[in-house]
Length: 176
Image (cartoon, rainbow, N blue to C red; front, side):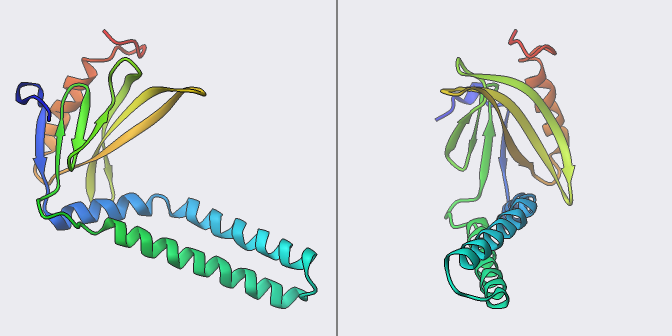
C-alpha cells in the first residue's frame, strides 16, 4: 500500500465515469483495429487464392467474413473489458513516483524509469492526466505512457499534480 504522506491525489470515480473513460480509451485504438482487419482480410485472400482452388469472388467474400468476425469479436472483448466488474468504486492514487489504479501499482519514476512529461489533455468529453516515462528494457530504453482520467470537478487538482510532477523532472529529462 502507498504511504499516506506521499499521496498527491486520491480520486474516486463513479462506475459510469470509469466505463466512459475505458470506452474512449479503446476507441482511440480503432484505427489500429481497422488496419488489423485489412491485414487479416488481405492475408486470408492471398492464402486462399494461392494455396487452394477457390475462385476469386468466394475467396474475397470468405476473407471479408473472417475479417468481420475478427473485428466483431475484438469489439465485444473491448466492450466487455470496459465494464466495471469490481465491488468497490474505481479509484486512483498518485504519488511522486507511481500511480495505483484500482489496486494495481504502476511505477513511472524509479531506478529503471525516468519521468519525462506530464500533461493534462482534453479528449472528447473527459480530461486525461497523461504521464510519459522512459523505461529500461532488454532492447534498450522505450517510452511508455500512463493515461489517468480526471474525475469531474477535479481539473484543478490534476493541474496541481502536473505541476508537482514537473518539479520531479528537469526540462532535459534528467531527474533532479
